[in-house]
Image 1 (cartoon, rainbow over the protein chains, first blue to last red):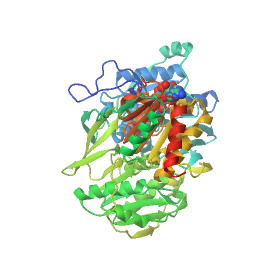
Image 2 (cartoon, rainbow over the protein chains, first blue to last red):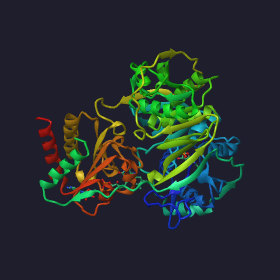
Image 3 (cartoon, protein in one colour):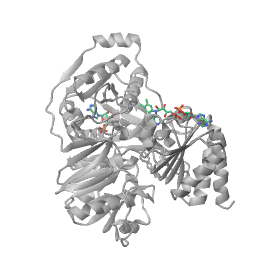
Image 4 (cartoon, chains in turn yellow, cyan):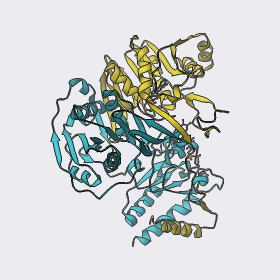
Length: 251
Length: 327
Ligand SMILES: Cc1cc2nc3c(=O)[nH]c(=O)nc-3n(C[C@H](O)[C@H](O)[C@H](O)COP(=O)(O)OP(=O)(O)OC[C@H]3O[C@@H](n4cnc5c(N)ncnc54)[C@H](O)[C@@H]3O)c2cc1C
Ligand SMILES: Nc1ncnc2c1ncn2[C@@H]1O[C@H](COP(=O)(O)O)[C@@H](O)[C@H]1O
């Protein structure tokens, strides 16, 4: 049984970003990239299934530019068996529907039984691609997984919703999108990093559809007005805080 | 017609549904037609209230099997909309809304936009703003399509209250067994009574500075005092550091890998203000920070900051609020 994990390359979440001078993109100077955090949880879940002998093969796929090979390399170092990249220079400007169709164009000739993804990529936070894909494949899918097991011909998913904790079973093949999992993603070890150097990254080309949702501008969020900070002594500072809440009509 | 997805959970109508209907009404001002609020799941009371926010009518598919799997709910929605002249479908960008919406869009082979915070029209094309990179940047997007599908950020749009009650019709649809492939094995429902951070009017959030799980009681007391004084829904939130330490459940986490919130008031207590935390709360209307470190980045975005020990400030604040509430 073969599993595919979808990984998207995104700017490191700990770095402040600004809009580039010409206003068409973010300023890319000094930006480092990572796999989107929820994808990292999905990958960790897959690695655990592999270690548990529940799956036979673990592949990873990104749709992205040549720079995205780096996150595939990281996944290989962590223990993925095969890595694929659908080449798309403009992947950050594709909407979910276009991305899913491009991935599907390749996927329809593959034979995976389970596809894992993030609940959303943290750049556009669209929460779309896994669900478009599931529909194109006519597979069952759920989001917000925090743990996953494979039990015969079904995936057993634990997830967190507004209701509380749910345990669901999906007949395979299926798509499961991850929230923050119950466990932390591992770091690759030295041996993995060495082995990954010998594993190939297979680049594939498919026709990339034009996005229907077009990005026409970027701006910085309105700055928050500089507030007041009190360094006065207790309990005068609490008095000031209460006055502030009153002025704002909050109490 | 303009469709507003009605969010319900186990037979309860969610407040956010009024926002979704209000947004749909704003779409109708340009595209015309009627606003039809559509929901599916366990039987719900009070749906006629959606008329006040601008729904012309409400259609509800009463079927318990649709309560758990988003795919099944989306399928029911698609069945209801079949053959109708649908110009737009609006969802809330909540946990359930973000899961149902893409299945509906996929069923219509249509693109969609997630989590918009503002919009206008250029002719019949939707021009919408949405936060990118966890709110560090705002993007403008243009969507031109026969059916405009999008989700709106909760609390980003005003609720209309000037309409009249709307007629509610319960509808039956034939649910395809393939849409019901997800089987529920077990449910551990959350304790009732706790306000979810995503739905709160005010949030009191604690970070590593709280020092331990027992001290979150201080925040629950403060939340309680605020509720009594103002009648608002007040939730207790947490930073990832507090969640990782096991002091609070993940469902309370605010931030990039937690929930994105925009309450009227956000009080950050013993939270430094890392970018990933700000990602979840920077659009709060008013931000208050209580932190003993004057250099903490949270003060850069706070409307009011108190530089002091939280273990002095919070109990005193609670005491004074209780006093005002007449206790
Ligand atoms: C991919 C990724 C995703 C992440 N997602 C999230 C997320 O969703 N949410 C999130 O919050 N973080 C997230 N983080 C973590 C984030 O980077 C920070 O590590 C975290 O927010 C720090 O939490 P904190 O402010 O509680 O702790 P700290 O940064 O340790 O700050 C504690 C603060 O408490 C103050 N303090 C201590 N004692 C007292 C006292 N007695 N009185 C007053 N003040 C006191 C200190 O001065 C300090 O400023 C994420 C990180 C990564 C890499
Ligand atoms: N370009 C991409 N390449 C690989 N996986 C992707 C890509 N875009 C989205 N995904 C997957 O789909 C998930 C949800 O993305 P999104 O729908 O963009 O929020 C991501 O967390 C990834 O797992």
